[in-house]
Length: 279
Image (cartoon, rainbow, N blue to C red):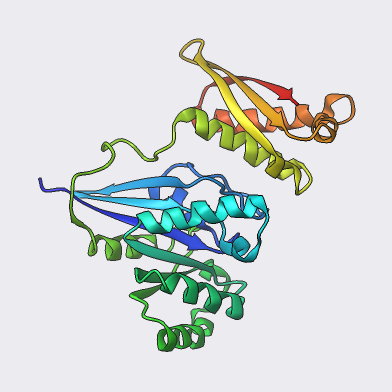
């Protein structure tokens, strides 16, 4: 069988639903989901194999930060453009329920400079009538060279197959980069660290999760039904330690229990999770 592949960078504003879409495409949760800005910080690749074709989806950071100049934004900007540079085609995702037309056109103008093929997908269309999108689609078509438009709902699995079938047309003869049973470029330890970061994003003040690092230092199967996991939260500023711990350790306990539940739902085993705070 002659194999083919295509690299697709998934780009769009924070909360457009990029992580939800990539999780839906690969069939498992590989990218964390949270309403806070720039949940996705590293470039995670989701892999979907369809017969002879391997589709590689680069889940990039939200593009809101492009005009910011702080050090965190520089890192995110680098990861975003790295994902775009490595891709053959750009899939730009728009939250159809909350469209900022000015922002949308600024973004399309910027990524159009790459001279790469672009398709635009309006997500969350279960929350809006598609006919309301027609004037925007016409305006985009008149200004930019877009390969195709799609209306989807990643959450409800509407229109996903239409996008996949369309993307298959752009695959080209090439060796596969990943094995048939691989769904992401990241290992279990990275995924576990991401689950803890997702939980921290849920419970902590806005700035804290972006000023800490997480390391999964131990992953050991104790038996067929038990897994022992050790994680470290590396804190840059000592003042955050007290907040993460909470009164009498109440916050870190809540975080540990919630993260443990998430890991259990993925691995379907009893999880023994140990979290250490390091300043």
